[in-house]
Amino acid sequence: MKKTTLSLLTILATAASTQAALTTNLVAYYDFEDLNNSPDAAAGNNLTEAGTGSYTGVAGGTVGNAAEFTGTTNDFLNASLGFGGGGSNQLGNNFTISAWYNLDTDASSGASRFFIMESAVSYDLSYGLRDRVGSNGFNDAQTYVNGPDFVNHDNVYTPGTWQQVLLTYSSDGTNTTLTTYIDGVAQAGVITETTSALSDTGIHIGNARTGAGTRAFDGKIDEFGAWNRVLTSTEISQVYQNGLNGNALTVPEPSSTALLGLGGIALILRRRK
Image 1 (spheres, helix red, strand yellow):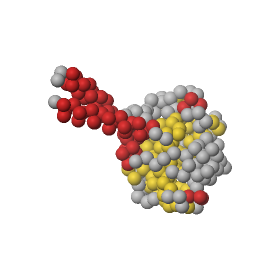
Image 2: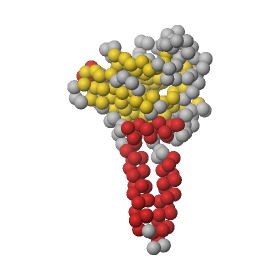
Image 3: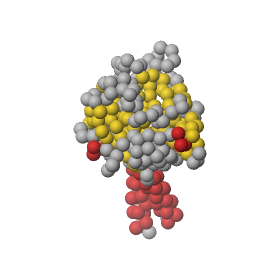
Image 4: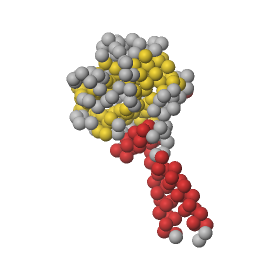
C-alpha cells in the first residue's frame, strides 16, 4: 500500500512540475478575453492598438474569447516585446512565440497575404498565410527572417479552422536556428541566421511590419504567448494540447485533473494504513 501511495504522489509531483515549467520565463501571455487590451499582458509588455479594425473579447476563440481582425490596412496590435537586443530586449536571443489563428473563409487582401505576426520594423520574426501553391485558397504558410531567408509550409491549413503556430529561436551565441511547429509538429526545413542579425523592438500581432500594412489578418487570433527561453518538446506538445482542448495556455493538461483525483485517493489510502 505504501509503495502504491508513493507512486501516485510521484506522478502528481511530475504533473505539477510540468505546469510550473510552462510558466517559467513566460514574459507575456495575451488571452484576449476582455474588451480592454492592456490587462492581457504582464507589466511593461502591454498591447497597443493601431488602426480601428481589431477587437478583443470576441466570442469564438480557441479558448473562450479571442481577438478579431477585419483585414483593415495598417491595423494591428503591437506587443512591446523586444528581442536580440532590440527595444527593452525582453526575449533575448533564445525565445519561443506561440499563437492560435483562424482565417475567415471569405478573407480578402490586396496583398493576398495574411500575417499572424511579424516583428515591428524588420521581418526577423514573421509568420503568415498565403495562396502559394495551386488554387486551394490560403492554405499555405511561410516563416521568414531578414536576409531574406524563409521556409514554405504548403497545404498545411484550411481557412475557417483553428490552427496553432509555435516558433523557437535557439542561439549558440553565434548563429540562431529557427524552427516552426504547426499544431505541435516540427515542420521540415529550419532557418539558420547570424544571431547578431536578428533584432527588433516589438511584435505586430495581426499584421506585417510597419510599412507593409496591407497584409492585415482577416479572422481571429487567440492565446498568444512569449517566453524568453526555448521550450522543451514536452512543453511544446502541452501548449498545443491545452489550446486543442479549450484550456488556457498555462493550465495543466486535462489528465492532470484526473491525477489530482488519484492523489486524493492516495492520501485516503495512506490514512487507512
